[in-house]
Image (cartoon, rainbow, N blue to C red; front, side, top):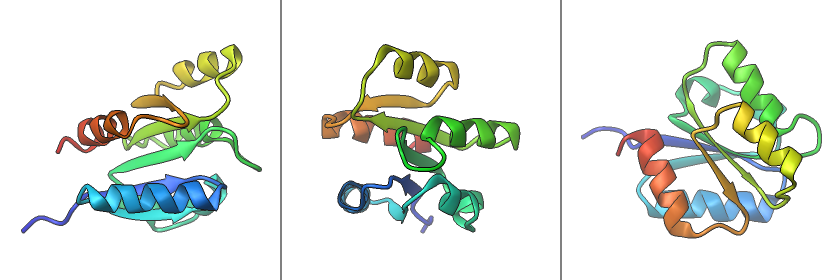
Amino acid sequence: MPVPSLIAIVDDDSSFRTALESFARSLGYRARGFASAEDFLGSDALCEADCIVSDIHMSGMSGIEMKRVLDARGSTTAVILVTGHPEPATWKQARACTPHCFLLKPFDPQHMTECLARATKS
């Protein structure tokens, strides 16, 4: 039996992170949360994750900056960016870093389900 895909969830809001971890697990994925982009980038999950869901606006490194670091390292892991702040500049920066999906908080759970399925090809 194949091992379920690992979804890495990077968000400095612990309640959102915990809820999204539970949501991913309810869909049959493994999930692991990180309170910052720096924590994720320094972890072993960097090599294991099949998909990364990251908030854009976090203290320290933003989700967009993390995506740029991953791209510079040659990562091909799908990244889903989420934000509760839909300013036009945010949209432009998010589109420029070519995330797999870009969702606004609060998002429709079906949209996240579809993004995760496409990202993990499951």
